[in-house]
Length: 463
Picture (cartoon, rainbow, N blue to C red):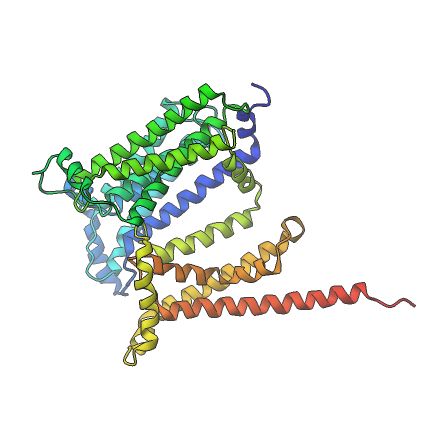
């Protein structure tokens, strides 16, 4: 078809944007692996002889299936492998792909091996080559799944399109959210049907209702976006009903699968309410699409095109900003809970109302962390201002926007009040605030100076 959506999606800007999207997601997945691997970040410098002695444990390549299923790093490796396969599939051509695969395979092995060796510096940790093998298996499984979908099921930009590639990412996220913490059940006394019936007696809380309702949105939106990329024509009533039925069926069977596998994990209970609420969430998205009488919105195409047109400096800034957030919030996934706001605020305020709070010990234990967040907050604020300033003629950012940018680090640190596995540290919050304040003052001085220069140049008195 000429002039169709497939041609638009194959445009250089959108294709470059998709490659950058997968690159960003892959690099962030590597960061999550490192954070999960090395948490808590409490390193102890040891003599080289002791390091070499303990590092010899890497020669133990024994494999345990039980340890594989209980590994908290393996799911992130699986996710990263899938993302990597999507990144390589949007490569420059078949000729270069074998070299790319060999390079990233070697790099991934060295990356996981170095993370394992770094555990020598963490007190109480033991290292083993078997852990590296476990994570390589998980990584390879994720990559293999991605390549099979891409090459065997027509998982290409001319077939299922970018949204359905993202749908694979979302299904992984949905499964991971549903089985976390990953701990298999040891008792199998109750059947799956009995567990469903038992859970149906308990009415879900308001937060569970809202969460499951929103969990039904991404699947429906991504599928409808994928359908919309095939044609510019609006859906007929018959095709509209067929599309809605397909969307609801996909969400229903996905939710049923996710709830079913919860039967095999501890601290998880399958629920019919979760399935019903996710289907209702998907139905609301279908209603929005039908209300506007269109088969597509095309937001993903606009985002990919914008991402493809950005300069390398802008992409690097986005990568650094999100990486700073991931580093500060890990292990956050999936521990963001609205109910923890109260506890988080209490942790933030408590040191200021307790007279015997050990500030001296707190300072000694967090000096490196304070310096790190101060530097990252200041750097992020400066670079965001420079980016907005360099694009002033194109996007016309307001002074308010440029004034808010320096406090990105403060927003990241205060965001910890939502995370049940993180403590909100007053010294780190103060560090981010001071960094943002210094950058903000610098911006005001610079902007006022340039404003005066501009006024003087435009109000010159003639001879």
